[in-house]
Image (cartoon, rainbow, N blue to C red; front, top):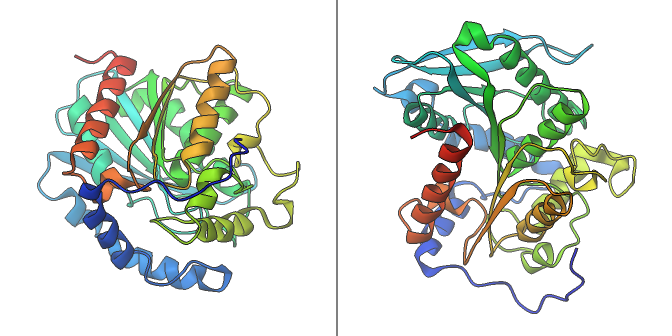
Length: 328
C-alpha cells in the first residue's frame, strides 16, 4: 500500500452529488457501529423491495432453492433467475450481495442480476450467506463457495454452460467474489470464467490513503469499515490468522486466478486496495482490467445511474462481459 499522507479527499463528480445525498439519506441514517449493526440491518431490509416488485413484468422465471451449505453448516438458499426464452448452454452469473458482510440479503442487487440475465441470455443465481457478527469468518465466503459448487454441479439441469460462470458482486460482494475465486483455485474448481469485483472490500487493515481520506465521509467510510471488519474477524483482525479467503488482500499468491474486472471510484475508501489487488494480479502475469472512475463515490453507478461517468462505467462493464462470455 502507498505510504503517501493524504492531504484532502478527492472531490466528487458534481453530477454524482445528488445521488450520494440520496444514498446517505436513505441508507446511512444511523452510523454503523458495533451496537447498531442489528438496527441498521433491520433498516436496510426495509429499503430492498419485495422480490415480486423487483421482477415486475420482465420475462423471467424466479425460484428459490435450498441447497447444501459447507460441511457441518446449515443449508443455504439460492434465488435463481431464468429468462423464459433461454438458449441451451447459457452463461451464468453468480451474484454475491453487498452490505459489509453484516447487512443485506440475496435480493439486494437482484434487479441488476435480472437485467444481466436478459441482456446475455444467462441464468442468474443470488446466494444468501450468513452474516457477521453472529457468523464470523469464514462463514460468509464458505457459504458463497458452497452455492457456487451447487451451481456448477447442476449446470446441465439449469441449462448452463459450466465453463461460462461469472462470479460478481459489489462492495462486500466484490470481496467475497474475490474470495470465492481464490477458493475455487485452491480447491480445484469449479471453473470460473471471470470475476467482477465492483468497489470490492478486500482488506481488513483499513490503513490505506483512501481509507483515511474518507474517514467520516462518503457512502461507506472508514468507521463503517472498522465496524464491519471487527464483526467479521473479531480477535483475528490485524493478524496473519485472518482467513485470506475472506480477506483476499491477505492472500500471498494471486497467481492462477480467473480474469478479473475491477471497478472502483477515485473518491472512495476502497480505491487503493482495489488498485493494489489489480497490480498484484498483473505481477503474477494474471489477467485483470482495472477502472478507477474520477469523482466516483462508493457504489456511484447504482445511485447515480444517469450520470455520464456511471453510464460509461456500465458500458465498460458490459463490454468486458461480452469479451469474457464471447457474446455478440
